Length: 516
Image 1: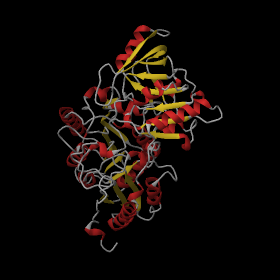
Image 2: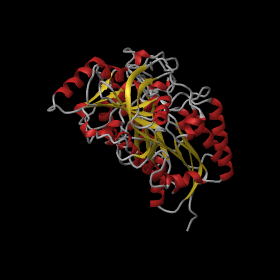
Image 3: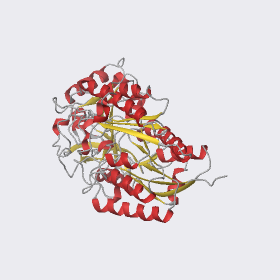
Image 4: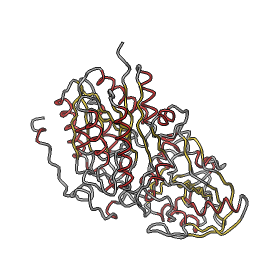
């Protein structure tokens, strides 16, 4: 019997928004920083704090035969600004040292987000892939999983044997994609060769146009079409929507098709078919947002008529899941000042205010000052309030992308604003509200709210779908670091022209596509 294959695991999870403050080590440590055996222990916990693809990979490898995990280092931060370059250097150095000490290995699994950047290195994902390939040599299979919002570089493709991208947005299939990556890795370990075709389009679709539920729009249709091309030697079809806020030369919708038996022709034929369809349908990537004024009017109407069903608003311009600070006050102020009853809003990130609530204690009444330290989009707001409940902010998700995962809001509190009765959940750590438990842990009955406002772009849909059907979900046009109105951003690194910001953007097919 051959020895169990030794598989190295290492990765960096950061979705980098170039307009947000720089991401530092503390951001990773507070979410996930697991080195060596700590990574394996965490991945096999009932409610792990790692990105879910890591325990998904472990589980599938366990199910499919003997193997020996060689955990190196995996770190994850909430989406934020580019990674501080010195930190990236330190992380790569530690990964290099740990991997060198572990060699030889029979394979490598890289669970990266794929939209990382640093203050000096514009392609840390490519740097990591290239480093791994250089260290393990040309024959050792390297397989990675990537977020649907990744930005793919040529260096990644050249260094990998296969890359598997999420197919759901909200992301609820990370474990499944990790299992797929594990299965491909098993085939590679058995001697199969793969070939990958890669195409990047000058198409940077606004994030709100990239939902994947059946019939949800052009991106959902494109993903469905891609899966019809599986079969024969085509093992995996991945279509990355990309993350435009990274503002990088490698931005743009990307298609990666992996074929077995070294069949590059099959991979290319599928990839060009998808690319042609995507480009031909580029004008579909537009979505109307609701104005703040219309949001207030709708909430007033819902509150006034018990027969009307409740609504939920995405504070789309301030999504912590895309680098937003989670503390813009536009919807908070508008709904409170209009005196709209039955409103629940969260999670508003304000460590100072949350700390004050813990100091004063439950039941205390005080003048709540939001954003004592103002920033570009986050202005001061004040209201008389009552502290309803305080919490350590620690919980386990029960639905959607957070199901079965541990989370922490840091010291947190629920306050009720006097005059409107609005309930606001405060947190200290930047987390998007994509999980009902982030409200329910404070005793909030979501089913009784008339309007719920979430600081999340889209992942909340999978967590709150038991309360709100799609026709009662609205994305509100708010100012912030994740506004879907891309013309508001001073892009510098983005390759131009690019659709939809440049209507005259053109795409030239790769030379190899001639005749396909």
